[in-house]
Amino acid sequence: MQKRINQRATLPMTTQDASAVTSRRVGERRQRRRSSDIRRRLKWIGLLFVLAVTVAVLHRILGSRSTVVEMYSSALLDENAEPLDQFPSLQYALQNSKIVLLYFAASWCPMSTPVTKMIDEKLGDLLLPPQNGDNAAPEEVHDLSLVFISSDRNDAEMQQYIRRNWMTVPFDSEDRQNIKRHFKTCAKKEMSVLKIARKREIPTLIVLAGHSRQVLTYAGVNELKEKGEHVVDHWMQLLKMSDAMKSKYG
Image (cartoon, rainbow, N blue to C red):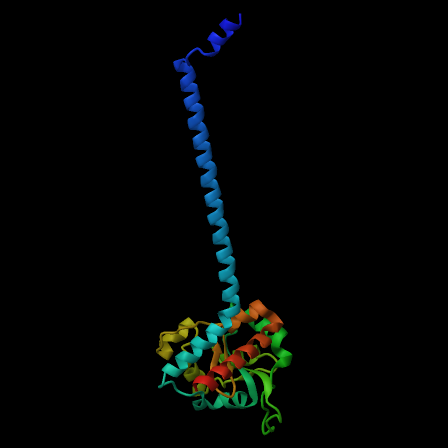
């Protein structure tokens, strides 16, 4: 009996059995390859995610510094840039403020409305009041001022749109058009009159260093939306970096 059992155990494998074993082994190898491929893909996805997060963090940390370096380098290279001293309507703000905001907007522009509201709510109390008549300049330099460069259709519209503590470039002043040409910033319909290829539309908020007249950023609108009431601290940091760059390279 035992001999018969041993004989059965040692019988050669049939073709059907061999095929089944081969299929099973092939299936196992495919499964291992799939698992290996999945692990590799997950590894790469993880690495890409970490890289994306790192880039985002570095961009956030270094973005402001890059802006200042780029703006200041451009100013150094542009030896023929006309100084802002040529615009009389900007001088009170430039001489009495650490930071000057140039706000290009219009009452008829729907995109200007939320920006104007945000400026009034977040910055209105912080702005240097406009000079009235023969009022003397403030004894101390103010942190912040705003000058409105209007694209309104007439003076009445502009006057109605002005918010608290805004300084304005007079509607009929040559400065109003020349400042737009200088910064290549205006409404689309003004381009033909100004004869410029504009770089920026309205609304635009250009942030200047008062004493050096250096542009700190052209992205004032986006920064205000992003940082809200803390945006002034951000601009002050840009001012410090701009001063450091000027001290080093100026």
